[in-house]
Image (cartoon, rainbow, N blue to C red; front, top):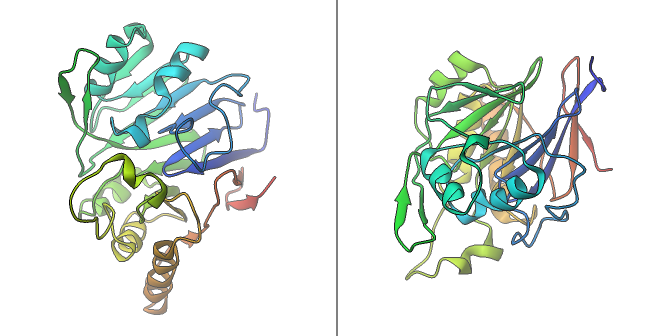
Length: 269
């Protein structure tokens, strides 16, 4: 029996999201929280967590997965390299469902479809060695009529159109910026000119995926100029009479709600 007539989604900054479905189940996606300067919520402030889904092993996506699994005993869906890391850190292997592109899984009654992602994933293990694996994007079947696409740091590629045809995501987050507040964590020569997708590429990706609602992400500050540029490109595509999703720009801590009949609405509370 549903406890609510709506699905609630909250943005924590960068690519971290919380979904509460109509049954009251809490799903955390790429839960970068404790070290996220934009996140207004502590990882240990929830009354329960039913599922954590992780796209890849980057620090700003893996985030608090280990701490959440340890505190709440919740299952984790992830790739093989993330599972190896979590097990090496002492998390019970039986609570971790490893998967990869194409292998849809159901954990805690929630179906998750991993899909192709053009990125990388590597992590330093507790013994000093490195593990690498296959990064994922994924679609979370949160509720009837709510299929949430998480881009998993993917670059743009044309088979996003095939993913739209196969899985028909209704709402999704698309990374179109570099979070300036955390770039110092990876010191390197030179500079990153774009994120994995430029704002223009992100607008195309949102259109190719056939989303009804797009949540631009991978920022801490919604006033980031790349967010404004994404909005500009989306409007330019619309002006060409191309079908484009409605964009909702969230600041960290903002909620949106999706009623059972569809149509996402902002709820700042």
